[in-house]
Amino acid sequence: DGPKPISIVGSTGSIGTQTLDIVAENPDKFRVVALAAGSNVTLLADQVKTFRPKLVAVRNESLVEELKDALADMDDKPEIIPGEQGIIEVARHPDAVT
Image (cartoon, rainbow, N blue to C red; front, side):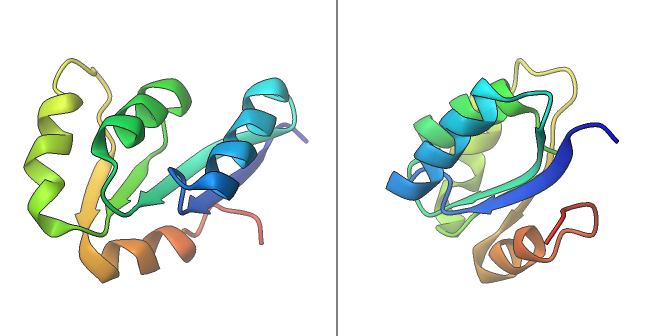
């Protein structure tokens, strides 16, 4: 079957970081396809580089350029959707198992 694709809303918060710790320990069971965070762009960028999601959302729209700059060295950059719409898109990602 392969790893289950998952989306994580609130990836930089307490529950989100704990969930990603579990994902990191079980790469044969889980694959991150989408991440959403509020305003911690530094941690979000690290998560994106580690887990390589296809889609990323940042609630604070003014931080999108900062996130893009932080990901500039990535070859396979994710799609970034700002604001509430981005959070909704992560939550509804069609590849994620619910």
